[in-house]
Image (cartoon, rainbow, N blue to C red; front, top):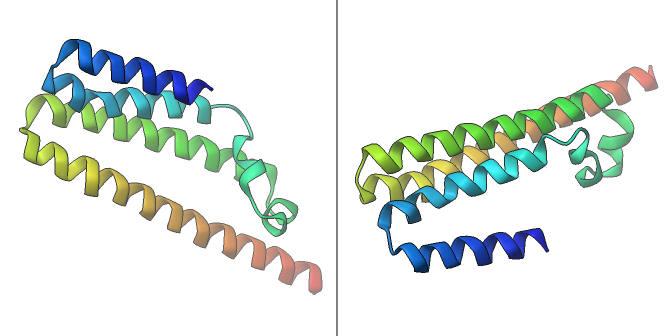
Length: 127
């Protein structure tokens, strides 16, 4: 329900202001809102497969959740700078390639790290 309200509020603000800069700044608001949600301790645990949740230390899962929050803040701040300092073409590239690419690279890095840690733990248990 909160996501729907955010869409309605930001969409209404876009229509009301008719300001191109506001449209470019909206992803910052969204990134900051997501970061705030990701600051909740342990939010990531419910999204992990069972093998990961059973074999990863809680500190790793919590740390990864906070790292995602930090990434969202960094992307929001970067978007804010690009929206104010550069033209629309640079912003469009950043928001469609740069921000999405950063999230994909981060997710792949996390996958590889989690996979390594789970395999290491399973090998230690087997030994």
